[in-house]
Length: 83
Image (cartoon, rainbow, N blue to C red; front, side, top):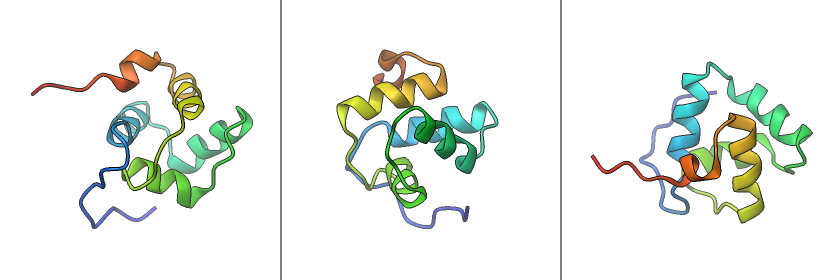
């Protein structure tokens, strides 16, 4: 995937955290996409990219799947860093 040129959007609060955790765990975006799809999340590569860039709304059930796929809790995914 190409590096993002635009600033993050404002459609969700978890996109940047998904990217940070995914990269920290050395998971490629295409591998993460495949994992999400096998876990029942109907998402395309474009939609995942938009989610990570905060240009796509995230459904509540998707938050649960994203957290499970990243092996973290929903609370960790939703927690906002203050600093």
